[in-house]
Image (cartoon, rainbow, N blue to C red; front, side):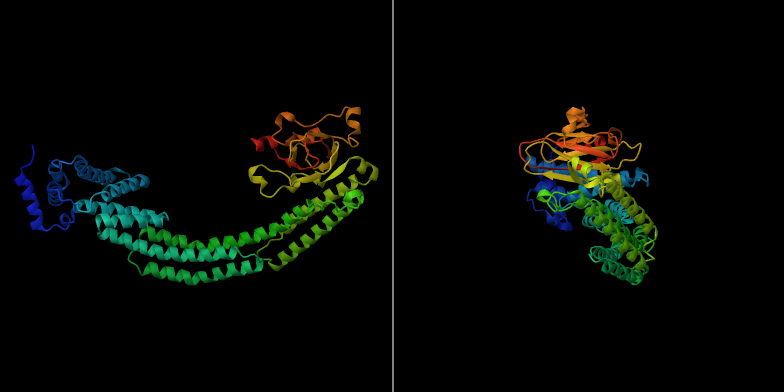
Amino acid sequence: MKLSKLGVVFATACAMLLGSCASNKVSDSDPNVKAGVSAWNFRGPSAATAYWSEIEDASKKKKWLNYVTLFEAGKEALETTDEVKASNEAKLLSLTNTALNKFSALDPALKIPGNVCEKGNNVTAARIDKLLAAGRLAEAKKMSKTAVSVYGTNSAMKTALAEIAVVEVIQSKKNSLLSQAEKAGEKENFDEKIAAFDAVIAKYPAVEAEVNAAVEGSTVSEEDGVVAAAKAFKKVRQDIRIQRSAAFRDEAYSYKDRMGEEFARQPEEGSGTGKNGAFTIYDTKKHYEQIGQNMDNIYAELEAFQAKYPKDVGKDILVEAKAQKDDLNAKIAQINKEIAVKEEYESRGRTVFPLMIGLFNSAPGSKDSGQKSRPAKFSGTKQTKEDYWWGMVDIPAGKMNDLVITLKDNRTVRVFNQNTKSGKLIEKNGLKDLINRSSKVGNSWPVLNAGQQLKGNKYFIEIQKGKTDSYSGEVVVYESFVVRSR
């Protein structure tokens, strides 16, 4: 049954006489709207329904009646928190946010009853404490801002706000130290980098004293959020020391990487003494002599580095590096033995560099996504017929490593396990092409389980003519080309 006009006038008059701070914010001149707002603020949200049901404009009626629905949904979310176990923080947080979202959508003229605000503050303050304890300061601050605008403050919310203030101080000082450590790590010069790390670590005691003073001087030193933030701050010095140690480890292992790079170093194109700058057997020997000397020099640099920082760089890295250097030098000895006979060397075709590849000298970072070797490279120009290349691999017995030749274009590749005499023996001796064509991917030509397919440690490549007279490519040993290419 519709309300009488007298009822609407009476409700409006009551609102004016009582001087409600909410009712005087009503911007809508519709008397039913104003009467409903007054009823909401003085008798509760459900009392507004009777007045807003009388609104003639359908869209306006829907808007105002929806505020009752929003309020009830927010209130229900708060009440449901009583039924949730304290251990289910995710659910409690979701319900708290639901309540805040529903209440935030109410018209500013509508007051939320005091008991609901009290409940909302208590529930939200508990969530803020948990967010702070989990290191989620930004979320806690955002929630507190919304809660204060919706519920106002009570003692629980004031405690939560005080927690936020203390945690902000702790976080600010923590971030300052971490920022300085980050800048230290960015320095190019290693000695300057370590000095910068040491300077940050030296500042820690004074900053820690400031943090302790901020905590002890507050009224919230025992709250979970503050305790967690203070505990997290205590880890800063350890974290920076770990960064400092990592810098030493990276620097020490960079010498090993440099030796691997040096072993795989390519000679400059056309730098040989043969025709048109081709590499002769003498050039190859000289190349690897220089590589051996350079690796010795790199190892000497590592010895000097360890002697300079004996407390930070253990001698175990020297043992590792020496074992690597000795292994690579042994590979060079194998190469020198293999190229000792000039006639045999020259009959094999052109030489890829590095002449020997394998997982003993793996590409940096390749272990994370399937190990592969540093590549041996080759290129040719003015090709008028098939070109022939050769190289060496080191594949331990029992390892099913794959040898893969990849070109920049789609010309055909064949691989053989013995000297073809630059192609002369392929047809004559019926030499078998080792390429597993069913596993070919793009321009990559694989020899699967190369350790078994190759008779020894050498491979011989035939590069057939393509659409152009120039080409380039590389040879790589994969731990498993099939797995990596999937």
